[in-house]
Image 1 (cartoon, rainbow, N blue to C red):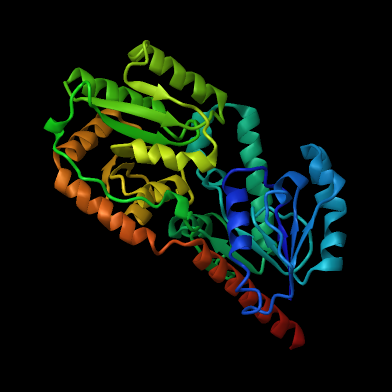
Image 2 (cartoon, rainbow, N blue to C red):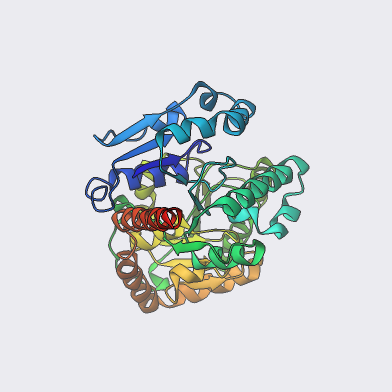
Length: 387
């Protein structure tokens, strides 16, 4: 079997991490699943980040290194020919392959394509149109696919309610967590151990968009300080939606113009984020739209206790090992943080449980289950053709 991986629409972030990790974990797997070669189709920028292997072919085309229009035209009129000449089965890493090659395994990565309430929060026609077009591409991909991979039970259930895909072969294969985030549980101290000079520092790692709610977290921390709680907040993550970035900046300027307790570091390279976890006393995760919350998983691995959004799929992964809140309500965030601060023994137990739980999420397991499922789909298709 010659496996093609369509990564033509990946630009960076989690998609690149996923691709790099499953390829780097594939050395001992290709023979197990009768994979003769793996061909990755993508831009030169993405391919340069992937390590070389004897069985791996990294293939790009001029159109994949230009703008969106050139890429789409190539995908519509030329891509199928290139795939058909080289591959037996295609894995669409972003679940938006729109060609006619068969068989295809599609993957669900982005819940923004489905959760339309967030479109109303965005309020920008151009941004909403982008999500709508990507939804249409995924709908087409999933309709033509022979197998579908989801990274959370929540995403699978949501997509099955939204699309006519119940008869497709499906598998839930969560992402792994990089070993660089593995930490240990530090002693959890009582609230009285913290002072204005030695505050309890919360960390919130996430890009800035309307569904990430950093401004609500900022207001909650500000209100708690007014009530005498010695807490600070460090924000890490670049702005990916400008109106949300402006709202965050305005909120920080309103509640902490001198930057005495809110520290917004913006974008930090992925390989350096683990250093921020080591400095944190507690972690806050306040998103209300995720497919599989990679940042939450990395937080669990760090050994730092967590205060978290109660919106699914966060509880699917964090289970009973976090203090939950409604991310859209400042008062709810405040209450959860207060309960968190008052219970050091519970914090410690939850953090220990998270480290145990995260051992179930390795990239080696993700790669093995991914190649196994693709092989299963290919074998079934081949048998049907022979009949």
